[in-house]
Length: 580
Image (cartoon, rainbow, N blue to C red):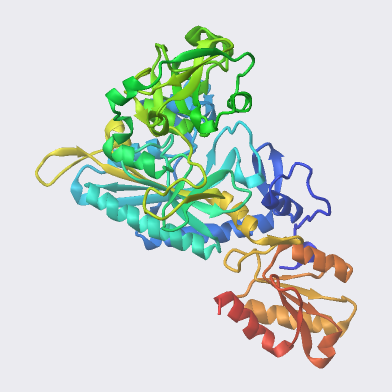
């Protein structure tokens, strides 16, 4: 392509609304333009990169035996109501009505549609297993679209769905997809981790993994072990004590006689000491000596959650434990109605609402808690003696330095990451509700066993840039770069330079190499600045050195350019593209 006629509107200034590095460079480099909040147009360079990523995804999906389909974005609301997700998705589901008043939704995902389709077409085990995938635009009404392509209202996703006759078949399909995702992200040049994850609104009955691109700009915390391969997202991560409790329930087992001998509870005056930090400062206590009690409203009903003063509540774990659809902190009026006190003085003793007690609280010998009376707290509060431990579980976020649940030596640590893919074992969550059944070899009718596998394709562009950039712009890996070579003649008026550039342009293209020829009548400094900005892997400058048969050759990642014989350029470029 010749740059003079290309629609490549680069910008000199950083967009004011660009928070993420990737957003900044994609807009400044002329890859995308915003139409409205969270909605972007892809310009030619951006579309070329998107097509490269889509091609990698498509190749690896087909390598697993998956077959491509294209499903409607406009979905009847009654399908979502049948699956039970119409309310679960909440305001993120874009809802609309047709002229006859029939409700529809713009698909954020396609479990319902694909399950109905397969349920209509497959009725016997002889037609299983089958895996179908698509690359399609999705819609989610994000409350706060931000970071460019990282959090959009409209985006391209690869979603695949597997259908098996038994769990063993699902396990095999899941593993094949898990391995395919590794190949996809490796080919895109990403540093990533596969982590244990929460299933969220997708749901399911089996395991699930998120694939996280490591990036400081990421919105998610990735929890890893310093010693072993354990990795999880924050919603799923556990400390060793929580994992041991899940296995044995030992955290809630206490010595009743020892608890009875503890000192009696004592109420004391704490005017204006509403927060944990206030209590620590005023009373000279350690954070871990305090019992933090927060009142939530889950599906319209109040519930109390207890964690140690040095810990924070993981709302996803609470939501899952309650099997609730909605969860929010109670307002001041609700707190007063439940506890009889102002916010900041809630405690577990005497509450008539359900108590969700974190494992670490259940193991405290005694602690200080709110007295459910404004300006008062209670000391010598003994878990099990003074409040129930019936609903004990893991309800907190892990802290750096917690013991690993998978090995004896490791400590947990966190890094930031961008979610780029997610794989789920759905089981029969959708097939049972939507009637996708098959007749087995013995004549019995069973629900199809399902899995689903998603990749945020447009989000991958941002993730790649977050890991591949410098102070001058993007540095695209060759596998997804809009072009392989940026060919820049210094002077359009120099006949020798232009003839050499044209010959090289033709040779590279004949070899199947994608070339952007900068034939603009601009100063060399402008051309080089734009070249660094758009991040094409190889830059070749044809200048005065061509009189001695030499050009200036530079890979985008290198600090300095090198003089190279023009007759060696083709093989140099081929080697880089092949990754030699």
